[in-house]
Image: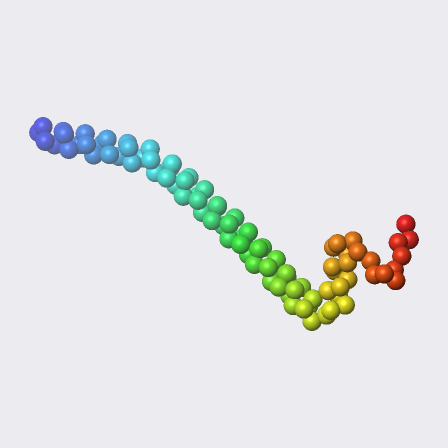
Length: 86
């Protein structure tokens, strides 16, 4: 009889502890899944951005006049024959 009571007490305690921990574990799992989803979306955005930049670099490599134009714009330079109309 004492064994049965001890067993029931242990099982009851385990159910209470397990019952209290399951919702916390579930919420933690959901939060982690959401974080993974956000990171996957950000990775996809970065992949697309990198692909666009690679294409831009490839286009510049093939077009020297566009290279020059970009460099002049970036470094605020003019050709000797150009004047500043400000």
